[in-house]
Length: 202
Image 1 (cartoon, helix red, strand yellow):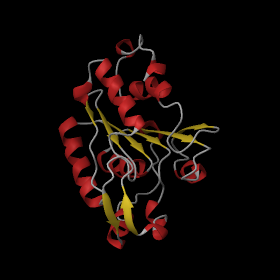
Image 2 (cartoon, helix red, strand yellow):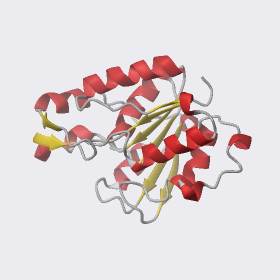
Image 3 (cartoon, helix red, strand yellow):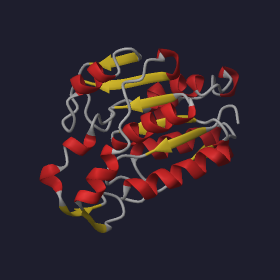
């Protein structure tokens, strides 16, 4: 479905995150809410990928929009299915970052408690793909002030892709709403559908 979008949230996040809600509000405003999917992902990577595969099958060929760990999932799925992906402060090799985090976790939005195990880490490692070479299928949005992930890892890994690096900001990606016209354009949505919107209100 042209103009469809699959939003993939990050680690311990949910469709209630600020970016997800802003994107949802814009898609509703322009009458395309049915072309957006915002799945609440299971904490286990294998289950999450199953959910995302089902959403891709439903939407056809959506733009994958992945934040943080969602960027890692989006890269795996974009390479597997030949899809376009827009990545926001994406995690690179996240399985190497989780050694100190094994044990009880809490979802920031739902409060759900769950156990991060070695099986989670192994399942994440299994999703790793070589750095993508097709620059036309990727946009990578990074902010140098990301306090959770070093943006330079993503800058190196996605060096063949279209990189948009902003000084400052943070891991949540400041100013996301104002950048939504670029996201909609990349998804193939006609500019006439959103040209009159004031994106600063979302």
